[in-house]
Every structure is written in structure tokens, then in C-alpha cells.
Length: 467
Image 1 (cartoon, rainbow, N blue to C red):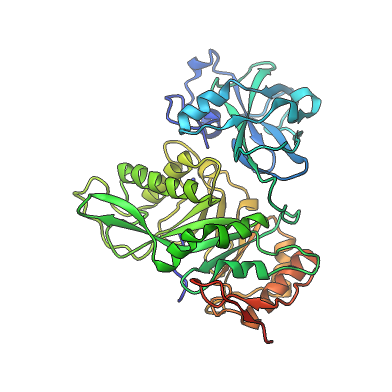
Image 2 (image 1 turned 90 degrees about the vertical axis):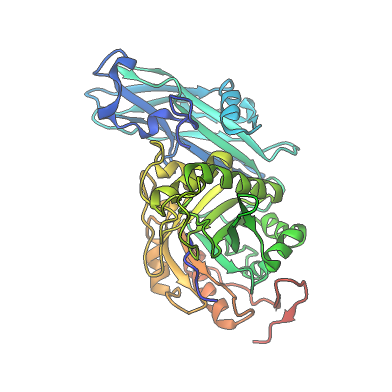
């Protein structure tokens, strides 16, 4: 099958709309200065030092997690600005009410903050150096996600902070999973579920016992419209349904080894396109996607705006196809799945470079993948660490990794290499050879030759590797 063009907290807005960090997306020229009592005030926000987001997912394995916090000013000052930040237990209840979640607090005694939470923004700068935030691993626990809210408690001089400004870490309990290789470069693979058994992704293991693949995207489930019921729903074909029915045997082994598994949802030849849902339609479909994601324990969502018919504009669930509608669906889905990752493919109208309700794309998107032959663009305030350097199409054998391109990737600020349709022709040596180029170039370690592969999605039978 050829590539189907695969096509998100921002702030808990001051009107109570949702999310943390109201100051994240403020355009300073539009600030109501009277709200701060002084038109000369400098507005302060705090961000995660690596991602520059106000809400961050942290994967907590069996060892200490190292993170950082920075302070960001709306404008540089003539003198240094002192900012004090601290753990804010009271915010958890407000956050959970806004998102419909029930996350427990990450224990304060497990949180270490360098310099007692004091941050200094130098004179003439708008961003501070980062201060270390260390998180100690979990004890025995069954909770999947914990919330760690941090707030600004004091600033110096004329610096002011919105009462709703928070930095939120959603700490994922992965104590029962293997930690992936420590690296800023990751491999994200789309597999055609109709042809490829997800268990094949475990065959790409290097000589040190590390898996090369960090993310697997299951391509694809479908968006469809039931005219009799007047509702949009998620459809699974027999192969996709088989994966759901055998989650413990087919998906859990990947997640236990540290691979994050993402569901991709594709248009399916009716009017319910992913970038042509009205605001109402986006909210309703986001609920269906969130229920599926939570029920099966997936790590995130991708939307592919393709193969849909023109919408009936008299239907209140639909609107004209647009980037705004595509972004709205990611935004509404991220609201319901704050601890899951939103993954995009920068093609068509499924995701665009525009805020939703004033919320920057960097706050509702997590990973950006470029079209074949192109690097991804960091939308909004996103960083290159959230973007793919290259997208390879293995089914048609295009833009395949080479020693020189992988070296350029390693020396860049980009965070991902994207592969589509790996082992679509199961067990072929050329796919393994290309992935070995990635492994050697990224990590200096060769892959082990696999002993077998799974030739069918709806089976656990294996064939031996004969090359």
C-alpha cells in the first residue's frame, strides 16, 4: 500500500477555557495593563527548559529524572529579574476539574529544585539559564500519571505574573518498562497494520540489547459518520481490530520494552474528515478518540486528513476543510488527553501553524513530522527537538537513510527520524540494512540479525529469517 498522507497546554485561559500557563501565548501589545496595575510591568512565565512548553510529559522509569525550569520575560529589563518558583499542591484540583482528569499529586518529597527554586534572568535577557528539577523514581504504585504543578511565587522589581500561570509536569509511571536508550535523537515508525504485525518492531535490536525504534504509529484506524445515529465514530477494520483484541499480546510487549505506541486515524470516504469537523464535531470526536486511547493504554494520537468526501455544511458537526479545523481537533483531543502525545504529519490540512483560542501549537502538539524529503517545521513556539529531520518511505524506497544523511541528523538540533511502512514486505533484508545504517550512525552500534519475523497481522505464527 502506498503512503497515505498522514496528517495538540497551553493556558487555562483567564476566562476558564482550559490549560495552564495563561502567559504562554499572550501578545504583549494586547495585554490589559490595568489587570496588573502598571503599564510598565514585565510579564513573567515559567517553562520547561528543554521543550519551552508550559506543560510537559515526563517518562519516569526506575531511576532519577533530570529536568530544568527557565523563567521567560515579555521584555528584557535594564537590571536582573529575580523569580521564585515552588511546588503548588493546590493547583492539582483546579487542573483536574478543567481537564476531566483525576491525576494524583507527584509527592513533593520526591521533588528536588536547585537553588530552592530561585531563578535569575540576567539584565538585557528575556530568558534565564535553567535550574535543575530532579524527580526521584516511584515506589510500588499502580497510578499511571501524576501531576507536578509549579508556580511563580515572587518576582523582583516591576515584574508581574498572572495568577493562572503554571508549569505542569505530567509524570508518567513507566517503572515496569525498559528505559529507552538515553539520546536526544529518536526513531518514529509508521507501520501499515493491514500488512505488518506490530511485534515485528521488536526485531530491530542492536548488539547491546537496545531497541532502535522509539515510537510505533499504528496506521490506520478510521473516522466515519453514522448517518442514522448522527454521530462520528472510530472504525477499526479486521486487522486493526485484531490488534485491539490482542492488546496484551501485540502492544504491551512493545510498551514493556519502552516503545511508545500511537494510534493513527485516517479519513474513510465519507464526509467526516479530520480537518472538516466543526468545533462541536471536533469536541465530540475527541471524546471518542480519548475513550479509545485510555481504554487500550495507547501513548498518543495522530490524525491523517485524507480520503474524505466533501462535508454537508448544513450538518452542525461539519465545516469547510481548513487548517483551523485540523488544529481544533488536535487541541480538543489534547485537552482530554493531556498525558498523551499528539503526533502530526505536516501534509494537507490536519495541522497548521496557527493558535487555537489563543493557544500556541507548541502547547497542544508534541511531535512534528515532515513530508518525504523535507525536514519538519517547528510550528508556533515549538523547537527543532520536536521535529523530524527526514521522513523515509520504505514501501516505495524513497529517502532511505545513508551514512551522510544520518550524520547530518546526528549533528543537527532535530529530534526525530521518521520511517513509513517498515517491513511492509515482511522480513526483507533491505529494510533491515537501512535501519542498521540508522543504528550505526545514531548510536555507533550495529543491529543484530533477527532470527524470525511475523508474516501476518492476524496471527502469531513466525517465519525464520533466511538471509
